[in-house]
Length: 514
Image (tube, rainbow, N blue to C red; front, side, top):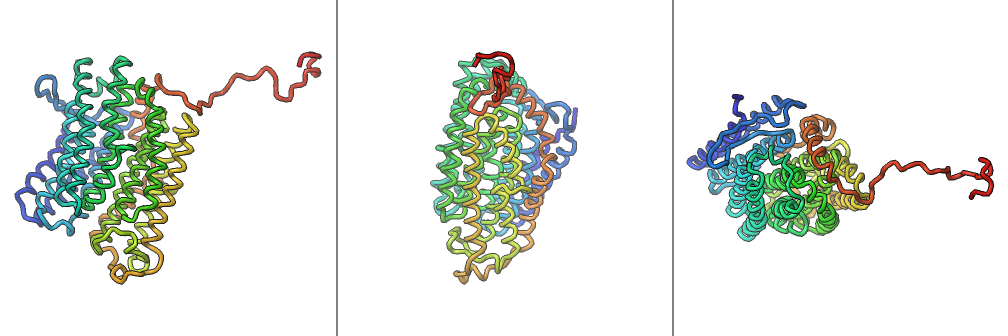
């Protein structure tokens, strides 16, 4: 029996969450910080001990509970990377809420730690129903975080978030029950290689799609996201953008593509159309926003559309690119929300027009903000560039049209992000109160510097993030290759023509044959 490190990673924040409920404000903050840092240390141990190129499923734990339902945990390279993203962002979220949360601090920290348990659970679950429990339960702490500690319109936003995501998931539960009944097992690794009837696949795929599309969120079911982001406290936005949006992408990689390859190929056109609309539409909506959080929320929808398009390219490049965009976007959008939180804590407004010229009195802040803006645009040397480049390269093999429109989205992305940066950091200082704001303090440095380092590391040396996933993505590609769809860019080497273009009949002694 190996050391149960995954169970420990679930237990540490869980114990911390229970402890926070009974502690005073300052003690709860300390406990939450220590618990999240301990989990980050365990995550690093997990990564160091992960055998690249070894068995597909590692750190496997299994305990039968009842009636075929088992407590089964195990990770592959894809899950490892997403768990690392979760444990990396959590201490930063606790630091972000250090001063800004003053009421019910114990309950708030407890909700965050519970959130961490459920996020790691989703990525590590190897039992279908265990996955579903973790996947659904993640709604509850987030609903509370938005609904109790959010902005003025928080009740509406938390209800909308809850109902949207729940409606999709009910269909998924029914589909899961049918699959378990059909295949006779709840074990995800077994189901990955089970061939369901292509006709049944169609309905199963649609049921799963209803849940994952809302989680991503894909256009037109994205409308909960801007509302949730605007109302959520800063740390809530970071974790929502950083990890919770990735659950949909993870669902596609883990369930939709390998379990229903034929249906995935059948609906590729639908995913492409929704992705293309999302990239263009949400980028144009982001251009006209006055609220910083809303702008970054819409940019998240546009980035996630590149992920969905990359996933359904059915090739290794597209899949690797989609994963890298998910990781890169998790870091960058989380960091952008932190940047908004920093100035919100000082001025208590998210209106872009109230700021301006911050580079004068907050030069260090302006530097961090610029790095994350550039990373969001996808500048070479930053995390998002690698992912977007790979995703679009994979997509180009399938459809030139979709690639063209998704690339246009990146250009529009540059437009709204640079426009945001210009209005906040440069220009004249019109507002006295904004001109008097102090630069970053030590706590804010401790939040932003690690993410900045991770963004640059990912951009300069992406191999350390791609290597653990490569084998699993190759296995997934081999699984779905049989159903790969053919669109307008099916560039294959053709058969050679009988004659060259400059062929002259007479020279070959074939007079008269034209």
